Amino acid sequence: AYRVRLALNLKGIAYETVPISLLPGNSEQRQAEYRKRNPQMLVPFLEDAEFGVGQSQAIFEYLEETYPATPLLPDSARQKAAVRSFCNSICCDIHPLNNLRVMMYLKEQLGVSDEQYDAWYANWIHAGFRAAEIMAIENASAGPYVFGATATLADCCLIPQIYNARRFNVPLDDYPRLVAIDAHCDSLPEFAAAIPERQPDAM
Image 1 (cartoon, rainbow, N blue to C red):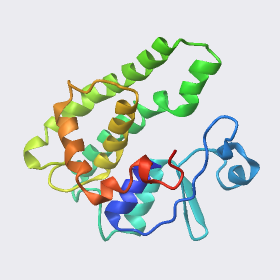
Image 2: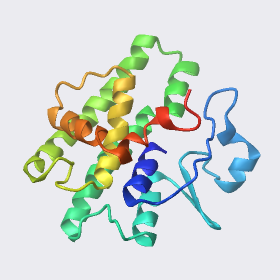
Image 3: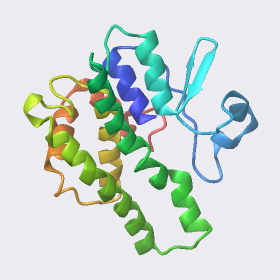
Image 4: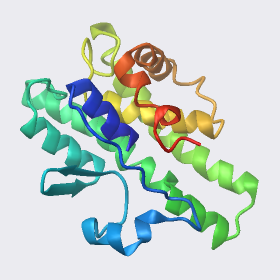
């Protein structure tokens, strides 16, 4: 949901947040009412009038096509592909291995220790960030974002993943370019408004 909030904020689209609890014992995502709307029983899920769509990257594409005034993809086909490749490096290579249901399975079903739990999380952060750092360095001279002078979907994917890495105390010393991008974005109201601590369900 963090990624989608960033995209909505950067595009200047007004929206209402409806919190869905993912916590064990109060997992609203698995209740019949939510499952009827979203069979995947995951978040985020975007509703626009009578239309609903899940999965952040599908939501990104929908927003790009239906709200084109502030694009978050570059003009050229090659640059679009480069941004999508970066997004996939986060959304497909890091996040699925470190999301809540995977981490809960490791803990509750496989009985991993706290040390193993943290090592698993850090391993996939480092594997993905090593590649992301190289990709970001290639564009470092063009501007403060992942792909130059303006924010793109790449930034919408990177910033939440850095937030999660810090939440698990994963050291980021080897990724100075990613950290610099995060510091720049942190100073902007569109990014500040999207952080989890500022959401209605913040704990």
